[in-house]
Length: 139
Image (tube, rainbow, N blue to C red):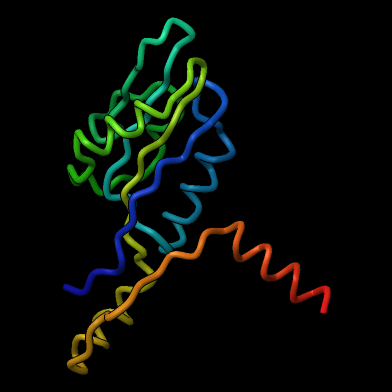
């Protein structure tokens, strides 16, 4: 079965609860088939420094995250979570997400069928792309 590229994201927020707009946007890209969320863990650090962890695959979310369609793969490691926990400030939260770029499945399969392979995959940060686009508009 062809698989699209798989990425891990840590999305940080300046509040303890997940933002409904972010949940809706994520659900939208899942619903339209662009991505498949393979694993998601939500972390929040209280003002007392205690970190609360919700593994969405466990179905124990009462913060609105339960609406997300998760393929329920246990791909987020303890090292991934520890790194995310270490970056959290009190009163902040983070979503650790592993997702497949589902849109690329057909291309991945066609490349493999042709005897090809992915030889380079570079993620360009959004701010770099935005800066380049702004500079191009000024020319």
